[in-house]
Image 1 (spheres, rainbow, N blue to C red):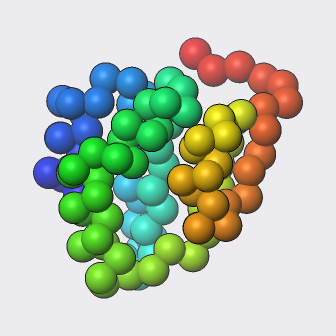
Image 2: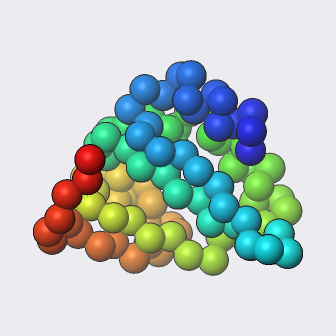
Length: 96
């Protein structure tokens, strides 16, 4: 994860946040990714690094849930559809 984080930080300027959280016994991992746009998310998903590490991750784990926050483009929704994401469209609020 450290290697992938360094790659994303150095090569994907439109990735705002890319963080991994483990529970106490290290049996569950929460991945939090924030992008400037749907297009930036697609760049990340289609990068060689992401595709390579995702295959490794899925060989030793399984994705239980995918939540998408914001207003994803049709293209991003199509790419994520096989993971049956729950989408939460922007309603109110702000970030700094």
